[in-house]
Amino acid sequence: MWQDALGSLQALDPAIGEIEQLKAIRERIRTRLGKFVNLAPGEDSAAFFASDLTREHLREVVRLFVATQPSNHSVPFAKQGTGSINLLVFALLTIIADLKEDKSVIFVMEEPEIALPPHTQRRVTKYVVQQMGQSIVTSHSPYVIEQFDPENVVILSRDGNTFSGTPINTASVKPKTYRSQRRQFAEGILSRAVFVLEGQTEMVAVHAVSTALEHFREDYSHIDLSGVSLFNAGSDREVPRYAPIFKALGKRVYGMRDKLNVPDAADAAENIESFDSFWESPEAGIEQILVKQVPTRVLRSFLDEVVQRDDYPTSHPYVAAQVADDEVADLTAKVLKARKGDAFGFGYTGTLIEQCQTEADLPAFIRNALLVIDQQLAHEPELALDEDDPIREDALEPEE
Image (cartoon, rainbow, N blue to C red; front, top):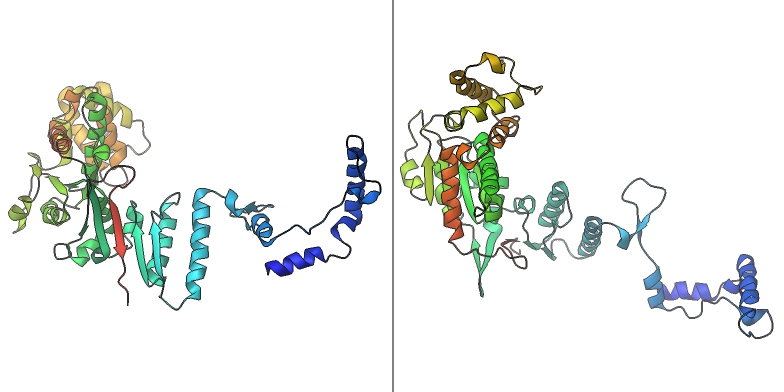
């Protein structure tokens, strides 16, 4: 192909230098150069030729132009964004793979999530898993890791000069449990420690209190910075069952739940022993912890803030002058309960914590638990959290 292209250029009729438009340009160049440089006589003293072109020249100048958005102009392949370039390279590699026999290719990807949005990460990983004979992937992304079954995931870590890999103990993780919580398990695999909570509101409260502690204490590390993943167990009775699962993954595991209103599961006491630390609330709901352990002035500040929102529950009206101090806690609890759940959890629970002006304002039950976790992790050497070789996940599809 390259030789044919070169031959066609060299055999143009008329030759490049004889094309009428270029002859006019050539004459202007010859005339202007003649004012400064002695040129050979005649019109051939300036000419255009393609004779010096080589195959390498063509490879250098022939570019794939791509339009990733509706536009009148395509953009050179190399000028696309990092994510688009990665995907284009991936697409070209899959073309090479298609030329081989079915499922005979070993496909290796290092951190395919770089510069790609979550939905694209999933699509790329699904294609590799389904179409390639064997895939080896290192990743920090839960959107990538969740595409692999637990028996195909290895947690890699490094302690000084020691590099090790730990497969997931599938005997401790039931396939149904893993499938129903794939995303959360993927995040837990990436973490140093897992904090198992009973619901979304608790997750919002814990994260908000940790953010506040980071602001109030210079020596406190936010749970995100410490590498702690929050895990939503779905209910208070479900919290203990995840302790042995994450312990089997080699993680520090913590648990917190409300006071139970119903009998505990038969194996709950044994499972709770697997937690590094476990906290059971003296109250039957997170709302009671918040309103009983946060000062009244903070609760009023919270009500003053949320009553202005369009989604404020009209069934619990609030007019500051008409609500006595001894009524504020009860009203706040009703508002929090009315706006509990995924749709409102951060907007209301998070806003309440944001009104706390000092560490003493924070709910002690949650605050103290986070301080214990921070202290324990601060005295434990971090494994494989450096930039060059952080914790990785190798997903291996066995060869036929």
